[in-house]
Length: 185
Ligand code: ATP
Ligand code: MG
Image (cartoon, rainbow, N blue to C red; front, side, top):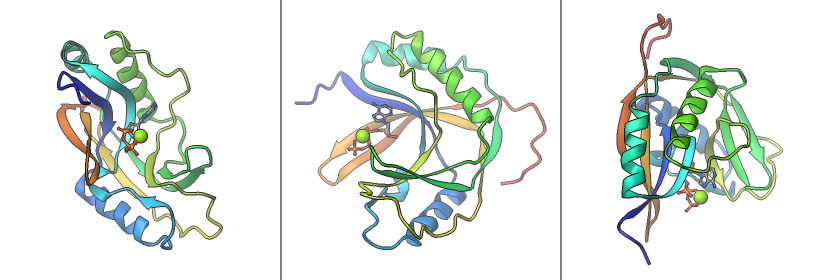
């Protein structure tokens, strides 16, 4: 039974069209049978998963997220990884200490103000490319570095339809531009 007053929500960064197309290309270079490819429209990096959210909580989230004051940044997806337990194959950045971390922490702190019980595990920014990958690939194709200029973050609803899960971007907040950004695109 679905309750119309409750939405399944998360906060994420959403790849621009260029990065999305490049990631779809990466997916295509994997052999068939590499688990279930994430639909390219669905590719994202989750900052904070909120889960079942009531209308009032969502309003709170929208208020606190508008006050997040993290800087815009660019980073590069240049690494593939595999996690055995959740059976996901992901793309990420080899640079660990990144502004992405700062953004994720800001968003997590903001969500906590609305009473969400936020995971205590450290944030591991990753973009899931394939699910249900039973074992690590022996010959994963090379990962061409994909630059990504992150200028905003989004509140997303996860909707389960007959055709599968899809994501609906509900709100987008710009990140503070300030420091000169030397990369283009
Ligand atoms: P499905 O669960 O139907 O396979 P999905 O995982 O893509 O699809 P959701 O479960 O709604 O869809 O998840 C939305 C996003 O939040 C995904 O990035 C997912 O990895 C992340 N997520 C889901 N559950 C959790 C959780 N308990 N903790 C952290 N992140 C989560
Ligand atoms: Mg899920």
